[in-house]
Image 1 (cartoon, rainbow, N blue to C red):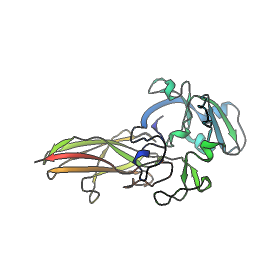
Image 2: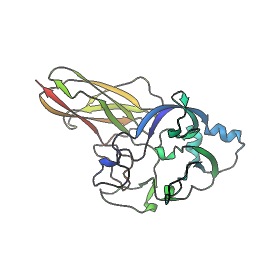
Image 3: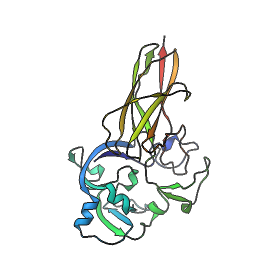
Image 4: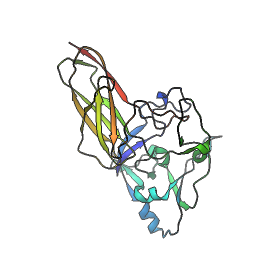
Length: 274
């Protein structure tokens, strides 16, 4: 399965007011081809039966002193739908830093569900308990204004990735009347990206980009656009994506106290000469 792996906190440093945690900008994300066994097939092979609603996952890593153990669980419907236990990444044995000998892959969901150094799967009637379920990796059920914090019970676990696009290639300089190629990627917790658009006038008008032909479910979609500069000066280009469920990337990401799932418009500045 080819799909995006993104840390839930990717983009955290872009929130205002600032939030605590690792100050990621754009780099905590990647797209890879994962090879392994379907969780559904593993559970069938093990003879698992019953009406359990949650899949508990455990790894072999030992947390540093005073750090709670990283215990997680996910709804059984998602696990049975498309989760896999992977032992290869891009056709090579899974690297230790990516969780060798095996890790859980949960397509379309944030990386906190992708348990590394996987040692145990178990079916249980209730969600896992602990800091990283009851406090960490939770998102407000009804987000408020920037700076507003919520109690744990007013939040829900982070699951689907929000629709997002990034500009990955744009020239530092361009000339009026000479086309320049702008490139990027887009992804979402929805199975696919429907369109990507680019603006050079702060959202007053948009031009649709060309989407790459390869579009596996939950993988990022490559896109490109031939942009024609109209006048000299500094031009700010911004991209936005729309996914296959109709969700549109917002100008500003919704602020939350943990800095999760940032997905505001991504921009690049180009110096245009006559």
